[in-house]
Length: 237
Image 1: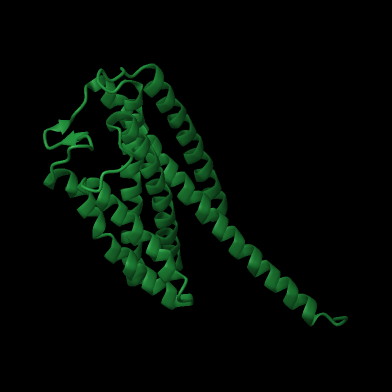
Image 2: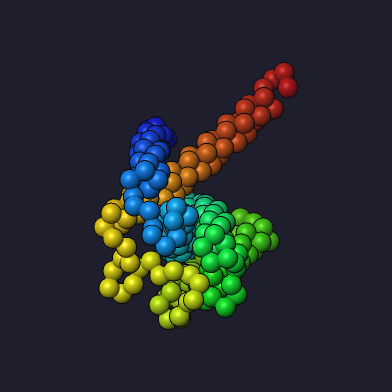
């Protein structure tokens, strides 16, 4: 029953995400106004910023799941944590790719080491990439425990990346959201919101898909072990 419910939820989430993504692409490129200064290249921001926020949310989920694992020792929390970090890293890579394309087209440079937002985001990526190195060094309960502790500790870098937008003056990276609100007209904001929801939906779909796949693999391994035991215990074996 649980697997059936998970499968139905995955279908619903995936379908909704696909519809939202298609709507976002249509709205961004055919409805949202073009930026007067940057032109059409500015439209990459709808996906660049949405994916960046989704990646930080994925890391937050990993941190919370790490705390839950240390409290309950339930393996499912470890799975959610490790999957979320993997998805967060994938999204972070997309953020770097879209960001460098946007920077080159708009400001004539791929990367500026003096921009704290770029550097702190790179630090976040490197810290979470080290998570899987640590995870490969242990097995069983030790692996899950060390991974949970690291996921919690690494999350300290996420607020650093987020607040670097506000504590440092950047001459290259644009300020999309300020303390007074969104730095864009409502005709742009509505399509950014759609893009952001689609990015969250993509994260949830990927998380659910990986959880279902891992659960299926566990059941297959269990079934294989039972079959091998039955064969070994049969009179003709």
